[in-house]
Image (cartoon, rainbow, N blue to C red; front, side):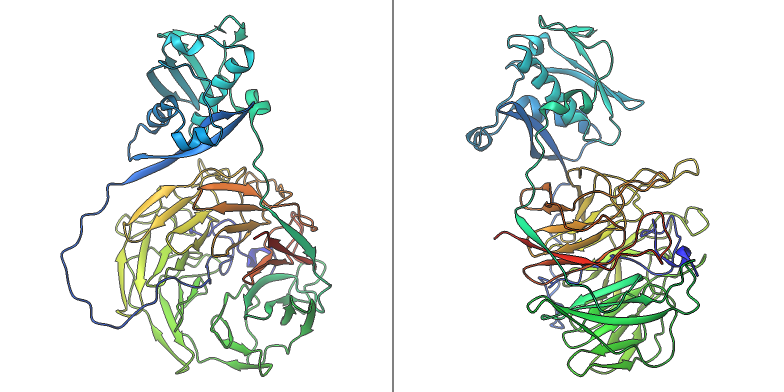
Length: 544
């Protein structure tokens, strides 16, 4: 068993190369709890009109800055974005220093997109007044606003219907489409999230792959595989467990799992408040340092796993060409399993989703393990209510996305990273844009773009910010490891980088949020087999 035993780019099932799922579930504290109280049926309220979100770029000093905007859902999103740009900064934004270099009175005559180029026609007021910096700034405002959309890579300008070859009296040559690279000197890099890193002391066990971790309230428990041979085979490998205490900055070696030997793939884990539940067949109690065997699960695979506060729920999974569509729930109080009601979802070897406090939201991909599209009658997204043991179809992701990670932030399901559906038999590039789902409105919105696409990252919710660290930022057959992590603030709808960690970049690290720190540990060296793993870690403490 070599790298094929790991989960790679396939968390929504259209590219399946592994057995189990990775970083697919947010296990943070839910904001809503399920209840068995009888509900009075009331007429359904009208759903809010769907909206889309995007950014527009203004000037602040001699740099471009982005500001969020929302608009009624429309297929003419480029037109909507340019209209918002021409409307200028809001009063609060002007108070914060935002201005626009676009002259008052400039109107949009038309915009069309073809072959990655947006053709923009503006009125001649666009080139009036201002010096060289003002001209570059106004061009950059339009270019950055349009190139946030995945269908636009460059922009070609026209004024009053005539293509522009030389722009304004400043003599700026515009006889070709231009992109962000032409105005990168105007782009102010976002300030890193304030905080500091500290290296962890060495761990007592060299866990190499298939890592899973939980936070107990005092320790981070890390479960994984050790003993992988130099050539990547698992013949003499086994599972092991260690614990790290960030207060004392000490590790302790924990007993090896007892009972029947298990398959050495990735086993998702959750903290029940008392035990580390390792799907599907064992549990560890750190207060007694003892493992116990769970009853046999009635579900087939090891896919999406979520802790509801009462039950460990798992759905889907598969390996080696299989994809399952069943699920089960384990109650540690009664030490019993129950099989979930049949879902409307397409089978998935690697679904993604999260518990939102009331339902488990599950997302699957469009393609089966052989690359064929699932029939249309299968749902691509559904929500499971454990109180009623029922499923409901929900709005699917606006775009197919494999290798993505889903995290519940208390209000929305944040889906970040991964890539779109393969095109022409070739993997799609990793996507910079993610999506947020509002269960109450059954509506998705697009997130602002990250600085680069990511997959195989550790992603956690802090209660305020989504933190992402590690992973690959290339999906075209080469692996590029980014030098830092990223943070997303839903309130400001913005991404910012994390400070540089005292660690080398890697894929598939494991991570935990302690309430005050992000702890990341382990992971794999890109382009090498799982025997070439990292055995170090670090903790990031955001500034308060």
